[in-house]
Image (cartoon, rainbow, N blue to C red; front, side):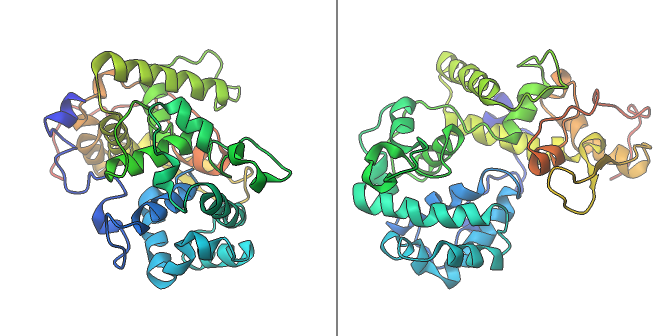
Length: 326
């Protein structure tokens, strides 16, 4: 956070930006308009892994530029979920598109019926994260869902509640209040890689509700103790992991043809050639939190199989004291 606040590397680079910057938004969307929070609401569907965040927002922006009407709740609620799924796949948003198609229609029905067609109204008067979860988090009501205002929204659990709050708060649509950042892969990699959260048995499924709850608790305690803005913390952790951690050779994978959880994921060969050494110095070697980083945690397992996997201790090149031209 000190590096983030003072604009140190990598936060001083033009490419170290979160996905929802204006340049990535639809060209026909007026920022600050009533349509803006609706686009952000739909963007949440694609912030669950399985696709790069920047790729996701650019693809969704492309869909908005050609079919803005489906982002209007009164229109979207009357579409066939399979039609929405087809539109998503046309712009490369095929990951979980069938589930998202259904959620798109059902959630707009809820917004229209109870919240004046506005995600902003959904958070109106909310002062705590717990209140937000009570309104938004899916309660898994299977029958007469639309008749129950408290049933929540399909696809929205704690992470997506935080994501929606983050998007709307950053854009200035809602007042600030304390909430834990969305616990995505980048947060997980930071927490585990630096042993902020210790795992006793890595051969078990550690990506579970208990682990996520512990991380939210730890981050909430940090935010309150040091009076840190959750928007800043989320952006700092996301940028560090995406721009630096992802480039370490130990976090890069060769991925075979997609076969769901059976997809082959293999590490690349680390020979510490000139290219890999230069990459190391541009990333880990220049990272403000390199001193406490212990493990390689590649993203491929998380995005393809839903697991968090440690790929051994983070290596350094044997020529670490030599300087190569990039």
